[in-house]
Image (cartoon, rainbow, N blue to C red; front, side, top):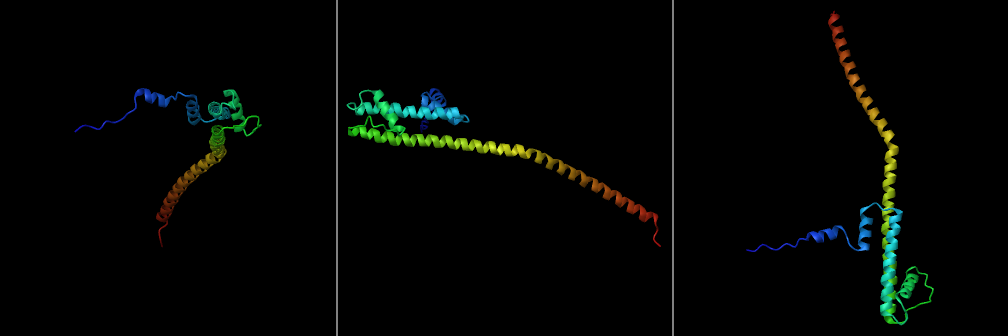
Length: 181
């Protein structure tokens, strides 16, 4: 009976998984791997916005080329749309252009909202961790004092046992030295 063939990734595939090749994948991997900074968060937002603008500009130029004479004009219109400025100097006339417009509006708003929410949640988690560390640092002297009090109580308990043993020995000596009448 033949053994079933197992699909295992090659070394090159594993290397590509560990080191993504495209810019977006590399930035997202870095963002998820490292604690985010304001600079890194801004980088992710700028990259996502640029991606939406470039892809949308190319699409609108390809699908509504009568209205948008170049990719640059398409990207200008996409930038107006995604930032909700909407000057109105360019508007898609063809159905395909309007479909691209609707897709860009929904995609841009949803995509940027999700990225912004993810970044915000990471910052909130970081603030909570820092607050917890701050509390731990504030409580450290109190905890050290409690450890000292606990040690002193243990020492007092041991000393009390020794005193009780000596008292017992004294009681026995007194009973032996005083005969009962």
